[in-house]
Length: 144
Image 1 (tube, helix red, strand yellow):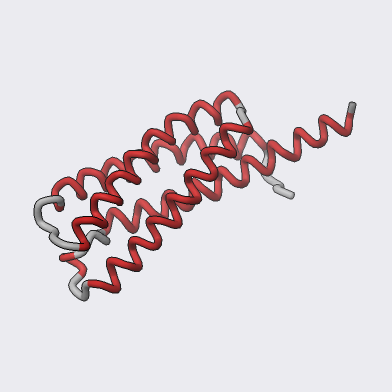
Image 2: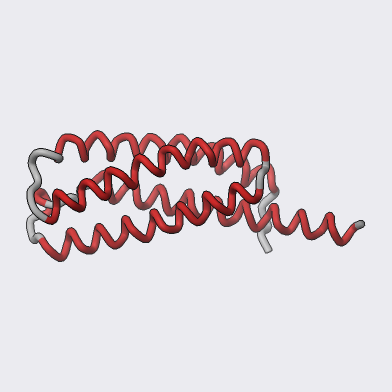
């Protein structure tokens, strides 16, 4: 199904993990600076967003281990966490845009959008890597 070699997918994911961590760290820094500025619903959205970023940073450590050691079940768990994260952040972006016209007064700042895109690419990379590992496992089972 996937035409990329396993090593290329693994290296690509290992390159994408620190990029995702850096974007999440930048988002956390921006969220902390906005914590006292935003009020009302945007403040609540900012707290949810901040907690999601901290969860993803912890998940990236587990993803690094699972990628290096090729642990497929751990990758499946990380895949679910990343899918939920991407869905929640996308919903937060739409909610922020819909409740406030001025983008400077919302929790949907530049780093949230960048972090969502990078997290989505990381999610896609995890999916491709899992598909490839699954194919290799099925081929090994058929060979025996």
